[in-house]
Amino acid sequence: MSHPSRGPVPPGSLRAVAVGGLLALALSGSAEAQIYESLDEGLTSGHAVFHPSLSYEYTYDSNILFISSDLPGSSPVASGINLVRARILAYVPIRDGRIRFVYAPFYRNYTNDRFQPEDGLNHEFDLETVFPAGRSITFTFRDHYVNGTVSLQEQLDGNGLAVGLGHYTTHDPQLVIDVSLGARQGFSLLPSYSSSSYNGLVSSLGQIVDYDYTTQALEGRYNYRHSEPTTVYGYYELAATTENVTNAPEITIQSRAVGLGLMRTTHENLMTYLSVGYQTLDFEGGIGQNFSGPVGEANVTWQLGNLARINLRFLRKPYASIFADSYYYLETAGRIGWIRQIGRDNYMDAGAVLAQQEYVPAQGTARIVRSIRLEGGFGHQLMKNLRAYIGLNLESSESNVLQLSGGVGADPFHYNLYRILFRLEAGWL
Image (cartoon, rainbow, N blue to C red; front, side):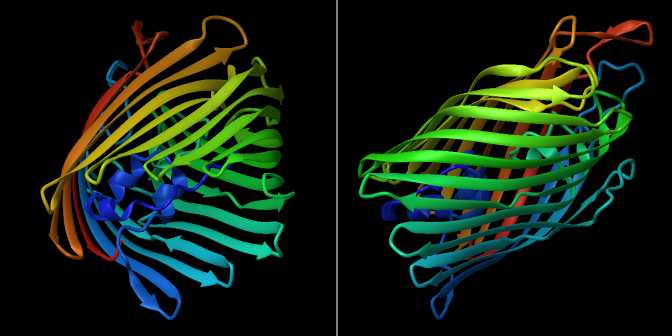
């Protein structure tokens, strides 16, 4: 299901958001907010607006490969990480439509030579085009592309892998056709294609894994505008996925989902997105159980005056699993993010994520993995187009099922880590 884009930031709070930097957007829980929300006026050329920027980031990560300390002989790999990122965001209006895109290549290396990334140069690209065709039809095309050695935690999608660091590629084009049937009613068609692949270490398996997924999906919606700020809709989605994992048979997945959604904006200070439904996943190949059950997502952003913002997000959704005895895992996660301006040029932010992944096997006890992540930091606007940020991230994970390793019980999903981050950003964000 697609996510609505967030509305504009109230003018009085623009400075508070501007000093927030990219991490504040990441706390919003909306992928499109991260990608397209600009933080200042940018540079104009005719009708086009550009936001070029350059940033340097240093992170000390105590466990870059998410290795469990329970496993005999295991030794978490700590490393410093240097990252240089160039970014260009562009907005080009075309009559009643628009084109928006972001290209953000980055170079990253690790100071510990125990891990050598496959890719030094990495690429991220996002595109959105909106073209009205008359008064009643609007075409929107979106595309998301990532290619490089990245942590799967950097991606917002579930990829059948709880944690991992390796070469990752994803490509997710989607077309949205909105048809208006009057002042209140309409329908939408959302055909999409998604492909992703990964090659890297899965610490809970203790081995290098190759996998790839391809999905073709079609979603239909009936939209009803209840009032000016509120739209409700019903949806039905069909999807077909092919999964290939190292040393495992090919698996095909037929997915069906039906449900209701709501989008509401109240005076631009309270933005709400809610979706609840029922989904089934039917698997062919391998072993495991099919899935059927309720799914849902909620995302609330609350602007507290001109100086603070809170975001809440909840998710319950199944994802395909790479583990041979489990077709899928069911993820239930809650997130909260907070950011507040302090004085003229400073800000603080904080966030927390609680997540549970339930791996349902063909028989036996389900493995339940629980994790918590806490993060916070402080930023300072050094000058108009230069800002600095320092932050701390704590993370812990464990499961309820032990496995024998070296004659003793060990939890391959148990890990702890911390990250210390420093970032310097220059340009028009």
